[in-house]
Image (tube, rainbow, N blue to C red):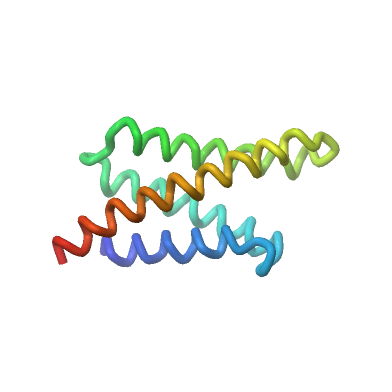
Length: 109
């Protein structure tokens, strides 16, 4: 079950990042699915959560909220600039997270 969850997270993450190719509607849908799967992932792995992982979840939530405010307040460009900056940082942190746990995942398989 954890493998399916991790694979679903990866697929929704990739679809979220591919916004120039898939369009904004797919990006919105994939980001909502990614947020929900991230919350489920947090619940499943709650015993292993350290400060860095909580920070990663908070960064996901902040990115999501700034994206929502960017849609609502489209006349204020600073909101979308903040969303893009946070999202770019989030991609790097999630890549590090996947890389670290992919090694551990392969050892236990």
